[in-house]
Length: 393
Image (cartoon, rainbow, N blue to C red; front, side):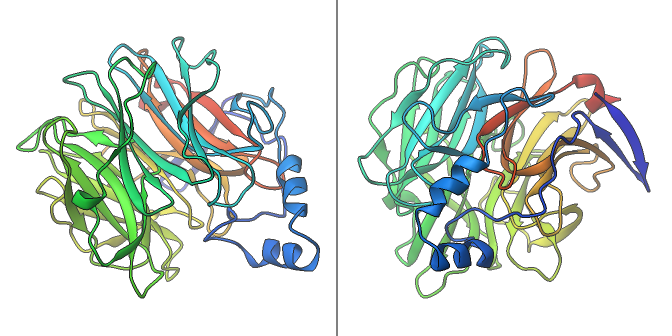
């Protein structure tokens, strides 16, 4: 069901009805552990966590959505942190973390499913990185348009930075390559890539540069700072790009805007305003402007995803839970002026929803892959299609 609604200068489109709207929500269990869940666990028992995980499943037939990674299947209790890309031939590769519980550490693997029919059906699950009881997480995949290689930058225990490569569209993967020494300063502590798709610059002086959005903490502080890393030689070697001149930036997403300039859009822990932060780079990610609030993009402190849809016409997309306090109301925001304004919005999922990613399909439609649930937004990973006509009209 598609409906349109005007709200001030913005246009809103709803592509799926709201089957359920929970009054109780939580950020993900880990460094965003909320007081509500903490009190439950402290006062009852940690075993309740499994009951919470089981109770947040959505039915596979939710209107307008498809279940891609289903909790309690394929050897994992829970799937989180979805990312997605399309190969040069149009094959979709969807990545996420396979977990045993909601915590962000412990035995976590990076897993993948593929689709050759624009997300109508999906392959069996494939584990692409497993290090026993260690945490393999935060995948940030990108397609090298020149070679067709698939590159995934990820982290081991939020400390080491590794690169995985496939030369056959994800059927096989090279042994993970440790690139930590090239992309992590000695005084940095916690580290994560993405988690969202990365980009390869398509225009300007830095054409073909691969840019991975990341974030880190510095020794002595738990406040996160966004940064990027990059490669100018097809991922064979890596360099550390610029860090943001502000703490409390965090997980980030990058897109090309014009003349090779880059836009970095950041999760924001600075709650002076409940909005995303943004920054511009004119040198391929080496330096970044002072971050500012994007007052049109509301957020509850959560990951989001930018995607350059097209340059002609000029269309930039952004997905995140558009709510000031809760992870709900996953929304696709559309800009036609390189992110200076976001005057059109498409509601993807009104119910509890959290991390997401976007990919453009061969037919011009957009597939959004995202976390959603009932009481909590972690009932599995779903996909929804946004039609080209709804984006461009």
